[in-house]
Image (cartoon, rainbow, N blue to C red):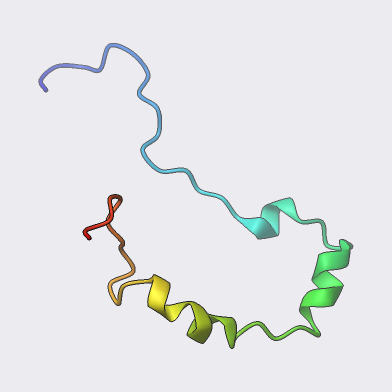
Length: 60
């Protein structure tokens, strides 16, 4: 498209940080120190492709 943009265009991507939204004294921060959820990744691996991208429509 040539020429200046005539109206504001909404952002294509939205940045969101939990660090900015969860207060430092929130209960979840103290629980996080004691809970190890790293094993969950292995249980959910079949639901994700190795590239990290899944089709929006099932291919079956």
